[in-house]
Amino acid sequence: MSLKTKIENDENYFIKKAKLAEETDPFTAKAWILTAKSLSPNNFDVQFEVYKQEKAAKNYAEAAKCFSYIMLTFQNQPPELLRREIIQLTTALRAPETEKNPKKEEDFYVEMFQHISLEVQNRILLSLKRDSDNSLDYCQFVLLLMKKFPQMLNVNLPHLLEALVQNTSSGNQKNCIKMLLFEVVPIIIQKPPSDLSASLVHRILTLGLEFYTSQIFLLLPAEFSDTVNLTPPICWSRIFEIVDVCGRILKWEPFLPYNSSWSKDVYWQKLYHIVSLSSTRPSENKQILFYGTCLFIVSLHDYINSMKQKVDDNEIRYILIETMREENEPPIKPPYREPNIITNPRCDKEVAILFRTAVQCWQLLQSNEILQIDFKQLLLSLPCSPYVNQFLVDLAFYLGQPEESQTLMNDSTLGTSNLEKNLRYLSLTLHQPTFQVPAFELMMKVLADLPSQTDKYVKNITSNVAGRNMVFLPLTKRPILQYCIKILVKTLKAKLENETQHYRDSNSILGSMLVLIQLNYPSEIKTAEFIFERIRSKQSFSFPDFSTYIICPDFLEEFMYLYTNESSKIQLELSPQTATALTRRIGTRGSDRGIKDEFKQLIRKQMARSNEEIEPLILHFITQERNTLMQLIFDK
Image 1 (cartoon, one colour):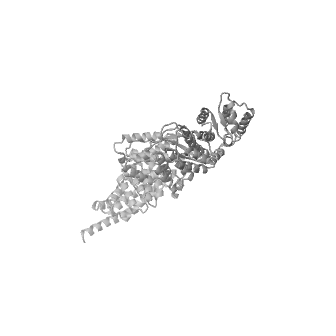
Image 2 (cartoon, rainbow, N blue to C red; image 1 turned 90 degrees about the vertical axis):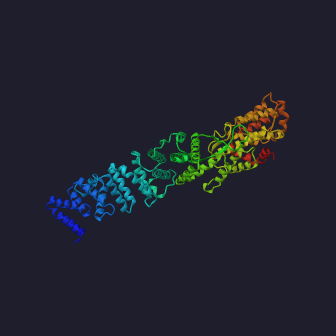
Image 3 (spheres, rainbow, N blue to C red; image 1 turned 120 degrees about the horizontal axis):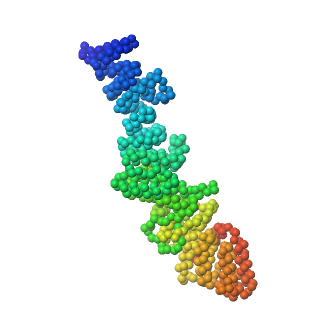
């Protein structure tokens, strides 16, 4: 008989004697097994029998020592008995507290587990992970242990995070992401770990952005539909909480919490301060990437949503387009500086701040090649492409890139209407040295395609700020008509101010301007004063279409004043029927009472029409007098 066989026979003998004595004499049984243990410390059967005795005696601490020794000694190829014991242990740990009973075996495992060292506890988890076919099951178990035994947090949290992040692309994606964001991240927020790798933290940040932006931008995959009750403010708060805790873990300069009442300019100033403090280049600093991306997408979301507003159960869309200064100035030449943005109620200065903040973040994140690549990759993982595409159109206009603007607008995925395209194209012509025929044709297309929704006239459509100006214009009938009329009036006025050899057309220009500025009078009172001052200086005014188009009470009263004023020598021709007589007689202070009556009757007739809708009248004038307007503007 070999020595090995003799030792094995002795071990089996001692184990057998110990088992026989268990029921009648526990002390003798323990003596037998301790003898076997001393002779064969590396025999699994002996060590497991020792463990079973301590377990039967409810000796939690000693049983923990025995179990720990077995785990450490036989970890590479654990025998089946040990595997079954691990399963029983983990099953007991999973059991809800309400199901615990001191008389049950499960209670022993829970108590014993608390006496096991963190190192052995971790080996138990690794064994479970190795033998489990379900990674989500392993993650749930580790999370349960951390909640039951907080002392395990520092040891097991990194392993749990690694496992969850690795499995977000598996078949358990939904549950892993939800566990990570709804159960594990709150634990991290309460007690941030200090030993997580930067790459793991970056991945957690990205997953948080992906999930919550899916909620915010309403592009959530169907499998997440049970969480759509997360409102945008809640989602933004959670995104900024994740950014904050990840920043603390990586020792970044603190950013700001989410507060919907704060201007986004406050966040931009903080980000700009962080960039100025950065000891490394932006391309090497991930905090700039993530801080800048978060601020960009929250500004982008609020900006695009602000461009669609509900008014009296109707949705009104706004677009950002070029507009003009109140006074004439030399044409603006490239390169264009960033423009002044004109705002109005409902689309106020905060909308302009949202847009500018998004622009500033975009430019920061495009400031060098490495940062640009990282930002592009991160942005592609976020479900906000439709918002980004709309923003890029406005960005191209804002930066004065007409070719890029037209290319983007022709992208069929944007679904840009012909009205919006033509209106934007029209706005691009405002920087040309003169108003050209193609621009006039674009205006005609816009006016032919006006929406039925009226809305109100906008208060601010031009500016006195030098340089480029842009305005948030509602895509409704009155503001668009107001915008086009403003361009026409300003063009005609410039033509009149520069008039030298074609002075014969000044009456038609003045008359056309009077018709057009009725649209939003008295906001055009300065232009009206300019027109009547020109008429006084000319000492004559002929406009045969007066009776067809002039119905503004203030204008009618002014013409009546010019006629009745004893000191006036102005000759007026205001209708085809009375043109000859008025030319002959008004200069004699109205000595012919019949002519006075004819003039007063004309004014009374026009005054009676003062309550007519002005928009159809203006549109009719532009349509009917299209050729005349082209001749006045283009000398054709």
